[in-house]
Length: 161
Image (cartoon, rainbow, N blue to C red):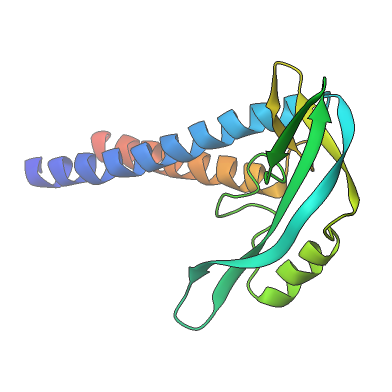
């Protein structure tokens, strides 16, 4: 019984740690995303837009659109490539299984085109093109809660024997 309890505690600790990290990330980026809905907007200019391979899998590649843009606030020019908060995580809204979807999104932002940029009034260098919560935040939150909740249930079951 002691060895099975020790093994379960070790495996459970790793699972809870993973779930905690996923949940903390989702909450941190989710708060920025939520606040970004109220940020002021300025018109910026797209400098570069392309589909970039971010991961190679055994039978496919994963691509994402990368959009680099400039904008001006209070006479200072800024450059950024952040589309939104949480959009770069593995469950974000802009990761695609093939170059076609990523290229389609990248084509929406052509170099030289104007773009609406939301910027943080506390730190003008922080900006996004897409504001608010995305599917990546929801999925990462649920994943974190699942790992934590599942392990708590396993511990409870093991300890109540």
